[in-house]
Image 1 (cartoon, helix red, strand yellow):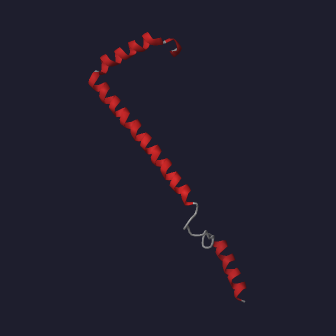
Image 2: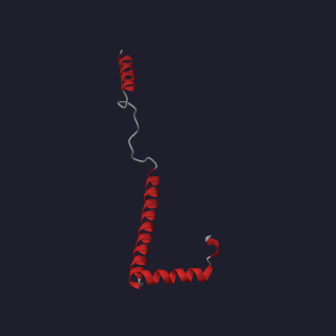
Image 3: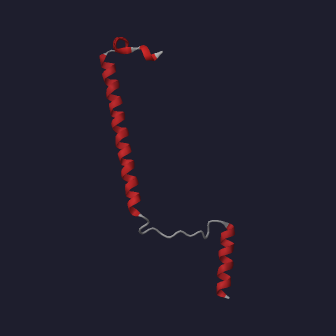
Length: 87
């Protein structure tokens, strides 16, 4: 259905939209669309910057991971191991 619109059809649609909404409304709408695109691009670049900063850390100055205290069974196993080492 949309394959046969062509250039004259697009021009007709543009004229109808211009008549219905007016030049001022369309220009303000396009301004808002432009602001949205700019905001989206800024967000994407900030996200990429954040990802590269995290990748640059490579675990430097980060505490080592310990499973102790995360689950009741691991706490009991850790306590048993500590008691065996003390005896």
